[in-house]
Amino acid sequence: MDKKYKIAPSILSADFSRLGEEIKATEKAGVDLFHIDVMDGHFVPNITMGPIMVEAARKVTKLPLDTHLMIENPEKYIEAFIKAGSTGISVHIETCKNLPETLHMIHNFGAKPGIAINPDTPIEKLTPFLEKTQYILVMSVHPGFGGQKFIESTYEKIKKLAHLIKKSKQKIDIAIDGGVGLDNIKKLKDAGVNIFVAGSAIFKSRDYAETIQKMRGAL
Image 1: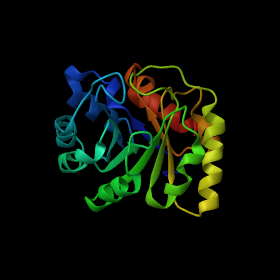
Image 2: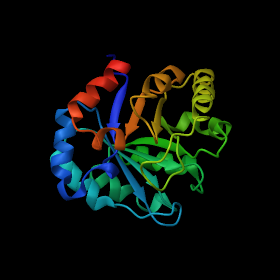
Image 3: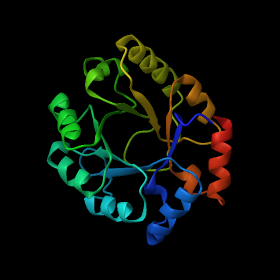
Image 4: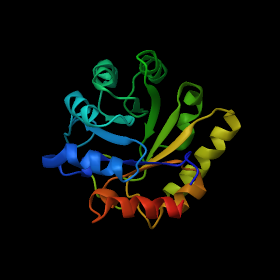
């Protein structure tokens, strides 16, 4: 499989009582990076982890740690997450007061800047910011909880985004987050995705290596 296609298990779906083992097991199974969901109970109706969890993950893996900030005022926490070990940070277009400045801050602290976009936000709102970002994280579920059903209209949204990126002549990765599994991973690739965030599909499976191998086969 072309390594431009990357599989990123979301550790929100891992067994937190064995987090180090879970990270090592999925790394051994052949994943490319880890996705870390950060929720503040304000922007989304749930609370998860902070920089200390990124620091813990960094101690057990050298793979990239992609940190998804589903929080208000993300600019206040960017430095702490990057110091903890985040190699990429995506912030939501819906919550950033000054998105270009926030993306610039991420870049200046040495991480990849990314923009996350919710299911109800029109993809066209990203157009002014394409020169400032290295990847777009498209939410295919409403953010806040794991294990939700994939929103089918996401395919068309991704195709629109791929067209916008092509027109912009920028080199931007398209990541997908929410309800990704063996049943839709190829269709998502065909629409334009190259980074696949999968939580339940990997961590709830019996054999991580077999699941990853099947995903790569589908790609």
